Length: 334
View (tube, rainbow, N blue to C red):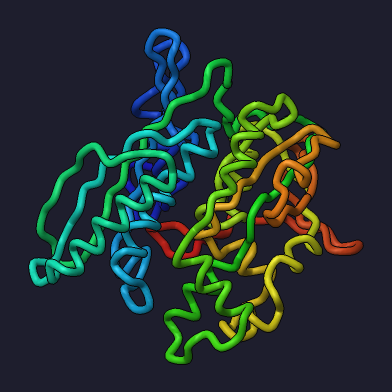
C-alpha cells in the first residue's frame, strides 16, 4: 500500500490505512475513526464530533447556489453525521478559505447562512479560522451531546435478519446538482424538488431522535456518498452481507428526471450522493415508517450473513452490488 499514491488508493483504502496507523481508540467509551462521528466520554457525559469539508469546484459549484445556501448546507451536512450517531448538534467550528476578490456583501451572506444552519440544527457557532485561497472552501466541525441513557448508534451494530431502511430521498440531490449544471433550468415540479434537495439538504431529525431512543434500531449512518458505497461501509463494520431489492431503488427517482440528466433512477439512487438520508438496520417490524411520518421511507432489503456479500436482487436475477458512489479522490468510484 505504501508504494501507491493516495489518488490511486481512493478514500476507503486511505481510511483503512489511517485506522491501521493510528490504532484503536484507547479511552473507555471512545469511538474512533470509521464511523460517522467520533464519540468522546468525559465523566458521565458523551459527545460526538465530526468534520466535513466543502470546496467550490469539487463538492459544489456557485452557479445556482446563493452564498447563504452554501453556508447553510455546509453546517447541515456536517450536523447530519451527529444526528446519525444519535446525538444532538450543539457547537459549530468553521474554517473558511476565501478568495481575495469575494465581495463583503457575499461574505456576510455566507456567514448568515452558516449562522442560520447552526441555529436550525440547534447549535451555535463558537469559533473557526479564516484564510485566503483561490476558491471558496468551508471546513465545518460540529460537536454534539448524547441525551442521558442514549447509546451511540454505530455502523457496526447490524444483525442477521435485520431490515434495511432508507429514511429520506435517494438520488434527488444528485439529479438537482446535474440540473443546476445544465444550461437549461429546471422546468417542472419534480425537477424543482430535486434542485431544492441539493440546495437545502434536510436531515430527518425527528426520526433520528426516535432511532436514538429505540432498541429496535441496531445500526445507522447517513447516506452522503451514495447508497452503493455507504451500504458497503455499514456492512463492513458490522461484518455482514445484504440483499437489496432493486425495485425499491428504481422507484426512488422519477424516470423522467433521471432521463433529463442522462442517467437512470437506479444509478442516481446508488451513486448519486449528497442525499443525507439515513440508512439503518432495524429489527423487523420496528415501525420505521410510522416513526418517520412525513418523510419518505423505503425498506430496501435485509441483512444476510457475510458470505454472499452484498447482492442486488431484480426479479430472478441476483448480481453483486459493488461499492459505487462518490470518492473525492476519484469522482464516482467504480
